[in-house]
Structures are given as C-alpha cells and as structure tokens.
Length: 232
Image (tube, rainbow, N blue to C red; front, side):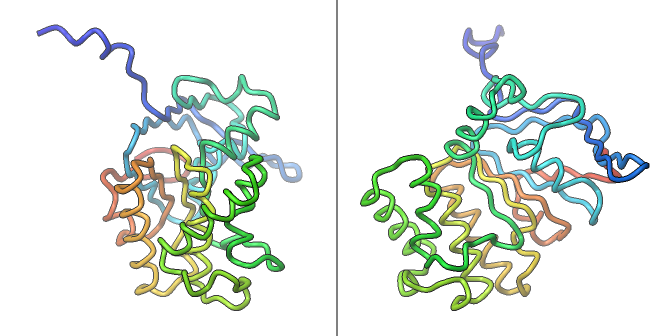
C-alpha cells in the first residue's frame, strides 16, 4: 500500500543531525558532543539520560537555540536554526520554547506572578493578559496561595513549580528541562516529574528532559542514552 500523499511532507517537530560541540578554554579544546543526531515528534516525551559530563545539557541547549553547534544542524518544524538572525532566534526561544533549569533561575526581587509573567511581557503581551496567564498557571501548578511570594520565601519544589509555570507562559510547542529534579529530594522530584508529564498530556506540548536519574527517565516515552558525547 502506498503512503498517503501528506506522509512524505510530514517533518518532526525537532530534528538534529551530526551535532558536534567543542569548547575552547585555554590551550586544549574540550569536545563535548560528537556527531549526535535525534528526532523528536510533536507531543513526544523524550529523556536524554547519561552521567554527569555525558553531554546532556549541551545537547539540550543546542536543541533550544541557547547555544550554536560547532558542526551539524538543528531544525525546528523543518526550519534550520542556523539560518535565523540573532533577533529571530531570540524570538524563537521566547515564543516556541520553554526552558526549565535545575537551579530555577528565578529573579529574587520579583514575586511568583512577576517571575512567571516576565517572558510574556518580553513578548509584548499586554500587562493584564500576562498577569492573568501567570496567575492561572500558578494556580494550575498548585501555588494559588503563593502568588505574592518571592523565591526566598518558597521551598525548592515551589520554586521549580514557578519555573515550570514561567516556561509555559507563552504557550510553547517545546518544553526543555535540564535536570529539573536535581536540587530536590526524591519525593518532591517525583511530584515535579508527574506534574510535567501531566502538563504535557493536557497541553500537547513536546517534552525533552535531560537527567542522570533512571527514575525520572522511566516516565518518558523514549529514553536516549548519551555516553562521552555520543549516542549509545
């Protein structure tokens, strides 16, 4: 049976081919990735698993346009990131990608609503709409009673929930999480992973998580193993 006419036109949401990354610090180059390729379909939940130093975070940063590869290419919906100007790449990250980091990266002088609303304000969403989205998201992740709290007044798990809400504020297609449970105890970490998995199903967002933890990776639909900058 022949393929449907539109099957050949389908492209993955995210595709990377032959990615290499070398950092130059001092006299000796540090080669972190070596010819890595990966495809991620819309709505997928993929875990990048490996020990510290395997290249997980570097790969995640390249996939989200936070860094540029030394060689190879990343495509988002068939469009190469390397063809984007600096302004277009910044807009791509702000609009289409939500980032969640191990260290939360919340601004200490802003309360929860202000932290969550910030990417929307950067995208020029009107103030009232950005604030409404932020409040709704914070309530959705279980922080309705913490709206006016600053990061220093929140637990680690609560700060990560704020970071998750912030990552979702611009309704991204792709959610990238770099060791999102790394600073949390096992119970809180399990809650965060279940929250992320539930949000992915509810919103149809694509989720890629970098983790060293087999328990975290077990929640994913697919696990991609990295070792010494190469796919196993």
